[in-house]
Image 1 (tube, rainbow, N blue to C red):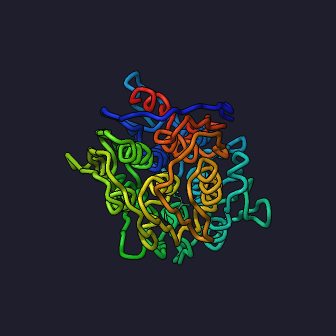
Image 2 (spheres, helix red, strand yellow):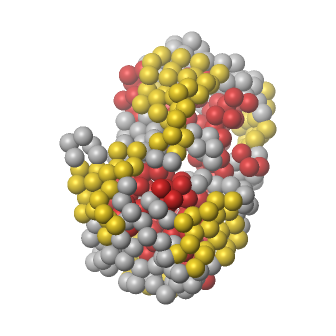
Image 3 (cartoon, protein in one colour):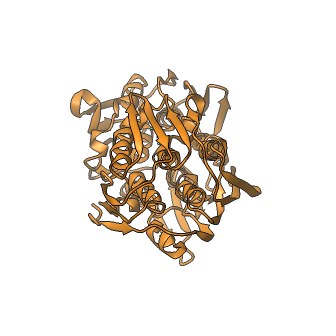
Length: 431
Ligand code: S3P
């Protein structure tokens, strides 16, 4: 559990400087998982030391994976191969992390032993039927709370069949869970999805030597795969950079350089959204790191205007809608976000949470069933708001506070440690 800490953020006049955001959360989880399942010792540089990724690391350590941390901060992970994990002798606690729980379900479904997954009060409320159902259809025996739709749940793995799955949701966690199960059985497993979700699993599995094909509408893997240890460089997290992209745009006179940020096209929807709103963001020094595209992002304060957001753009920016709603509240005109019902089942119901918090400091924002409608340009006031224990709500409200007319106090900010442990330090250094 994190500290229930209230922080007060005062308005600022301009933000200037260079920022190195921490490692990408999604890529860090996968680096730990695939290195643990590979043959040999992998080196991971730039891993995010957030609580979510530490939950993944602890789970593999419980299953016998040895990990050494060098003084440089690099992690050395001694993989045990696909068949080398040990049955955990205790419950695996995924904390607040949906990625840990859903991807681990896929991995554990292929392992010939018993395991139990649980999480914190927020994760135990989130839908797990979306992975449990297809994994059960592949042959895993899983039983859990609420007719096997919620954690805690127990998995008896092994003896899977290859599978062809049409996912009703564009979810990288669902897609990855099925591919990770499929990777452990002879034959080809394919997942189709309604819109393309983030493809870090596909890229990194290929990087570790698995036969994975990405195509328009989905991905497939050929099992039984064999992964070979690699050196992985984790790029900075665009979802963490997003807070400073919006801050740099809405605080007049700002100029920020965000270095070494992952710009995978399945994640870079936030850049497209903010540019479409009139934001001045330049991508500099574009390059590739361990199979992932990376750039430095230069952002300068801009006059923003409202836009309509929906369709394939939504999964490409799924974690950024809290901070997009802040940008929209500071833009001229109307922004409508639709096709984003998934926001209701994130760490919290992010549609309700952002509407409540932003409205309480003066924004004109109303919830829609599948998104929200924001009439921008009304000055934001000071006040006191709740994070609802959701890291991205806490950081979004800190960004909103930077342009408010008076200070905003945010309750329960310890949750930012799940994805961005030094967020408050970076913010304090800039302002
Ligand atoms: C993630 C996928 C997304 C995202 C989450 C991380 C991943 O979730 O919201 O923060 O690492 O695969 P969904 O798969 O539920 O869309």
